[in-house]
Length: 406
Image (tube, rainbow, N blue to C red; front, side):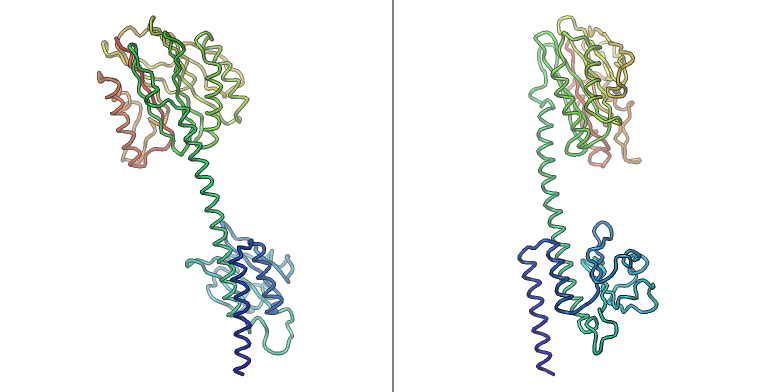
C-alpha cells in the first residue's frame, strides 16, 4: 500500500515537473494547452474535458472528448457561475451537463478565472474512476496551467501596451514639433504673441501656426478637428502639411479655403470635419484679412476704446460639404493698440459639476481688459491649470494671442 502511494506520488511529481518545464520553456498558450490535454487524456485517463476561461468575456479554451453541440448549450452565468468549489455534477444540474462528472473552478487573485468540466470516457468502468481518483490533482495542475496562461496573456498585453505607449510618446513629440514653441512665436516691433497647446490625450486634433511670409506680412491660423485622439491627430497632421504648402499672401483667402476644403474631404471620413480661423496681417497697412470657417470667433480688444469685436465672417467648416456654398472674407483695420485671442472650444468647455465652469463670458472678462498680452495669458492659463487639477478638462485646448502695438 505504502509502495503504491510512493509510486503515485512520484507519478504526480513527474507530471508537475513536465508542466513546470513546459512553462519555463516559454511555450505558447496553444502548446501549453496541448501539454495539458495530453496529461489529462494520456496520463490521467480522463475522457472528456471542457475549459472555459475569462478574458474580457467567457470563451471556450479547450473542448475535447465531447461533442461541440453539447458545450454550445452551456451558459456560464446560469450553469456554472454559482459554484466556487469542486462540485459533483448531479441530476440537479442542467441535462446538457450530465455527460460530465465534475466541475472545477480555477481562481486567480480571488476571482474565478476558468471553469473546467471533466468526465470519464467509460461510464461503466470497474473500480475507481480516473475523474474521482485524480480530482484534487487535476485541480492543482489546472490551476498551474490556467494561471500560467493568464500570466502569459497579461505579459503579452503589457508588452503591447508599452509598445503603444512608446509609439504615442513618439507621436506626441512629432506633433509638438508642428506647434510653434515659445521661442519661435513672432515677436517684433509691430506685434508680440503668446501661445498654449494642451491635447486631451497624448496627441490631439488641435493645431495653430504662424507663418512669416515676408517682412511685411504674417499669416496665422488655428484649427480643430471634430473628435479627439489618434484619428483627429492624423487628420490635423495631414492638414498642417497641406496648409503650409498652399498658404501664401498671393493666394486669395476664399480661393485658399476652397482648396483646403477639397483636401479635407479627400483625406477624412464623412463624419470628420475641421473648423478653422485663418488670417493675414500686414504690418505696414495694419490691415487684417481673415476667414472664420465655423470656428469660435476670436476676440479682438481695443485698449484705447475698450471695445470688443468678435471676428465671425467666413464660411462653413472644412469637410462639411464637398463644396463651400459661400465664403465671406473679413477685412479689419487695427488702428489702435489692440490684442487678439484665438482659441479652440476646449477652452470654454472646462466643466466639472459645480467645481468649475468656464464659458465665453468668463473668457471675455479675462481677456477684455487693459492688461498686456503676457499677463492676460497668465490669467487664462491659470484657469486651465485649475481645470486640469479639478479633472475638468474634457477636450484638447489650444489658444494663441497677438498684441498689435500702437
